[in-house]
Image (cartoon, rainbow, N blue to C red; front, side, top):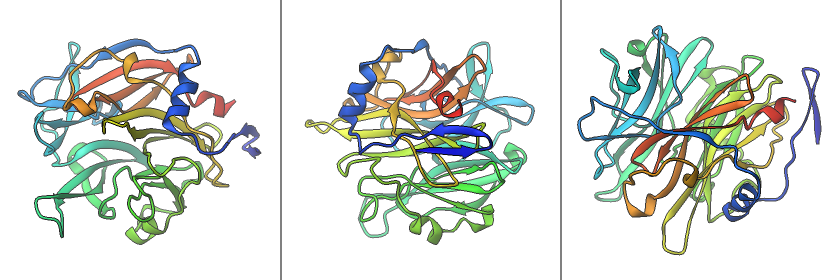
Length: 323
């Protein structure tokens, strides 16, 4: 499959669905490119963990990371913003704190769009929680105002500005439509067109996940030829009920809807050893963000085992889609 976009010829190879086991086998058969594993150090949050971070980004004239701040024995978390001082990330003075999980960001039409997962009491099940993705936007951190609340029971909802100024919408329904969680894609002409109904009607990408496994988009990169590079995760349970989360990447053509196979870009063992929130989360890498470099490498920021934030340097997984 070859598409011409802005004088670029790009082959998006899509085969039949690949399981986590197949993706892992393919990844481990290649030479690892992982270098410089680092555990990020945070202070100013008491004894709480900081994990499921974003990549660093510039706002208000400084570089910040947004992170999920949470007690080891709780799911009730805050998103806080950190700046680096002498190798340690400390809370940014005067920055807002949001009662949300799993921060993510993008810039759309020059404005910061920040999202996170809001938990609230389940409408029908006693002592259970429900969740939804909420979005804020603004020119500065202190001006971030709520502009959209996604459908109940949907995490990993992501937006991105496309090459022509349109908005790409990546969804992840669960349940009757998405099983344990599958990625969907659509595009709209403006943020005002993003509605709960549109998201619920968004078609799923076929043959990316088997029904017993799940995944989602974590961060979207507009590539030089107009394709969208998707940084995400793919996950499965093993026989013991333990969870395995792998960072993955693929590319999608927003003009045609065509997309490539997923590929794993790292595994837990390539990061430094560390803490885990619970024993069943030991093998969890939750993609946070990717910082691409001119030398063909990229820094992957990730949440590790629902307890820590780490970074590794890898070969840029999106470069081949631009060549």
